[in-house]
Length: 275
Image 1 (tube, rainbow, N blue to C red):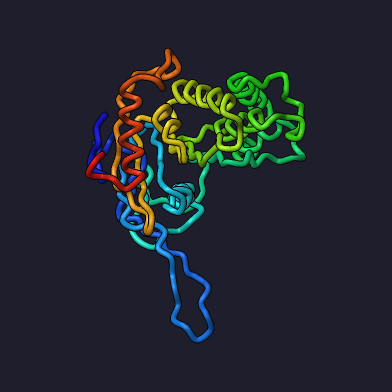
Image 2 (image 1 turned 45 degrees about the vertical axis):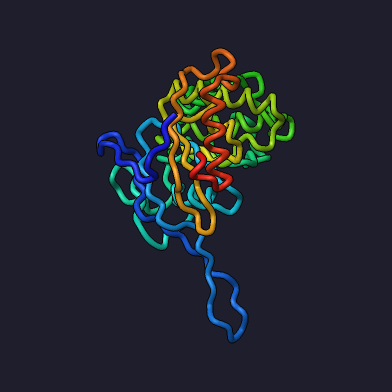
């Protein structure tokens, strides 16, 4: 386990996402006659995310985790700084990024197959090719027998698998995930975590994963970025030096897992010195 500087500099060729001095401000409703007010959600966010890395982001409520993910998705403009993907300025949503949210966000009028196919339709992928791609991801998430079911016929965990398959099917280079497993039970959550790791290892995607769970962040990621609130900024980045694959043995009960968990807990409690 290594606690490192919050502004790491990876080799340029290794960097997929670059954030430099990112600031995000939201205007607040002003009282007539009063001076305008604003809320500083993020300030001086500096971060390099390596190509093929699994990075988790943790922080207290209100620290701007979801706002940061919205910026990476191109859904929220920044007020200061620069955001780059492969050295190019991020200018808005694009098919190089897939998004999986806490709610499954599936189209209720489309079958499982048609939901997964959606991004391929946007890319104008030929119909016959689309079928092969969807078949592959149905197998990958274990839902081949449910391809003609509608979302209301699926469990919560199955819906999240469909959402993950939909995000992966059009082959984005980056996967952005915002508390994707928060709404499912503990056993299903662990199953989905292991499936996500298998998919990540098979595809080599760059994943940015927001979570409130310290254990989930450690179990999944290569590094954990810790955000503080008011305003949100990266205070520390923790290297997770645990062996992979992570689903072999009882990793969560290992001494190193416990040490990392304690360090993150201390940081989130604002006890940097003791950590």
